[in-house]
Every structure is written in structure tokens, then in C-alpha cells.
Image (cartoon, rainbow, N blue to C red; front, side, top):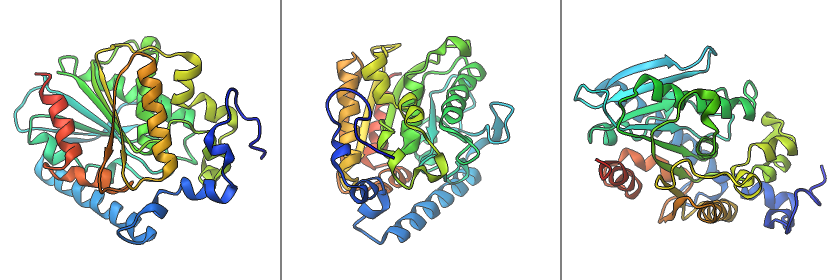
Length: 306
């Protein structure tokens, strides 16, 4: 497929990359320096599995709660010890390039957050090839609407996504809630090592399972929604953190910085954070640790709202 002339305006930086360079930039495991790429992927999955097992063993929870009629439309809800529905809810969308990962290996942050009185929701969605980007975007929006309707006395919904999950969280940020019949009580967004312009991925091997056309990519790109559709913040006071790891690839850095800049231009209360000494996987793995910088940022954002 020819990349030339795609989109409008100034030529995007990614279009100047060779096919090999583009592939490399959008392969996060190739940028891990602490271990080999395959080992990094295995370690990430194992940490997620162990964290989820611990969360299920030690926390009050409701597992596999359906938020829709589809087989993949389930969520796990973890509660702090105190019995109350008037809690802050931290909702998490896992990564995996929209084609791997699951809620059953993504409860990294459950124990540190529930220990501080925060309920945590880990959302499943239909990954490719079963799910299309349009379907996933719709599913995650419905999952958030479900939480708001189920817990109307919540003390705020704080949305977080990692990698592909950060893209989905960004799409939720820009959702028109009219058709969902509810406006979620958003109090914060944490977008971690995400991709916000999907067009480059059309030309990589990551698209083999997704089968995105350029039209699909443009329609589902939060960056484009901000620049072309001029999406406005529902609540200008709601903070949005765009975070990236020091050892993420240059393209992931560019995508994060440009999305942050677009949010600022659009009137959003956005901040940017490059987390030192972590790669694409450590940046979310380390949420198992209560003293980790991102864990502390999340808790400070949530707890100062009370």
C-alpha cells in the first residue's frame, strides 16, 4: 500500500521512515534494554498473571461481570475492604496491540489501589481478529457507562489504559455520551505508552490481525479527532496525564507528545510525564509497587479529590 499523500496538511514524520524503520518503531519489545524481546514479553505476562492471582486471592471481588451481551464483554471489579458503593473507581483497559492480552492477566495495580480505598475495574473487550477497532471502541465506552449506571454514587471514575488500552481510553475521553444515556463522572485519565494516530500501523505487520484500512485508522485515531473534529472537553477541569517510558521507541514518544500538545490546544487540562528508567512493559508492570512513581501519581490524583 502506498503511504504517500495519506492525510492532509504537513507531511507526518512517520511517512519519512522506511518500511523496516516503521516496523521497528512500532515493535515495543525491540526497545527493551534490560533483557531480550521475547523474555520481556514473557516476563510482562507472568507478572500480570501473578498480580491477578494475588488480587483474586486477597481482595473482595466480583469476577466476569457482564457489561453487555457479547461473550467478551466482561469485567472484573475489585473492592477495598470497606463496604461502600460511594468509592472512586479506577477503570483499566489492557494493552496487547488490540490482538492479545486479557483482563485475566492485567490486575497489576489492584492491591496498591484497593489498599488506599479505591475500587479497580479491569475490562475485557473483543481483541482481533474477532473484534474490530470500531467494536472495541464501542465496547470500552459501554463498559464505562455500565460502571456509572451500576455505581451512580461513585466518587469519580478514573480511566487508565496501557499501549492499545491507552488508545481505547483516549477514544473514551472523546466519546459523545448521548447515545449511552449517561455522562460518566470522570475525574481523571491516565494514558500510558499509547498510540493516538493509528495510520502508521496500517503499514506494519501489526495490522495483519486488525485488517485496518486507512479510513478505519483515521476514524479511530484520537489525534485526528482532536485536530479535525475539534473534540471539546466535557469537563475542562478533568486532568489527563499522557505518560511514556524513557525506553519507549521514538515514535511512541512522538505520538505521546503530539497528543498531549493537541489536548492542550483544545482546552484540556493535560500534563505530560516521561517516566525514567522504564520501558514499554515496566511502565505498567511496576504498578504492582505502591512506591512506584506512576502508582503515586495515580493515588495523589484520586485521593486529593476527596
